[in-house]
Length: 82
Image (cartoon, one colour):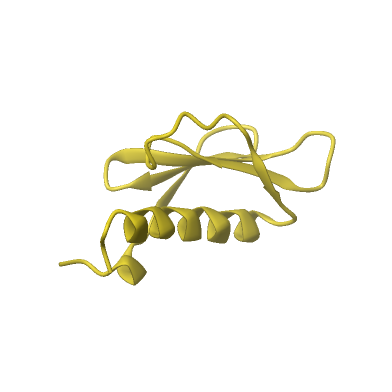
C-alpha cells in the first residue's frame, strides 16, 4: 500500500504561468500566476469530492505547489489512508 507521505504530483506547465497538478493521469489541481498581484492562486479540484471554485493564495510558486500537495495528502488521510 502506498503511504500518504509518498504521494507525488506531476506538474504540467500549461500557458501564461498556469500549471496543472497530475496524480497519475488525473488532474487534481491548478496553480496560476495572478496578473495584478505578485502571488500565486491555487485550487484543488477533481480530488476531494467537492466542486470548490474558490482559490487560495501563496506568495511563491513553490509555496502554492507545497500547499496543493498537502491538501491532496490530507484528503487521502481523511479517506482512510495512512
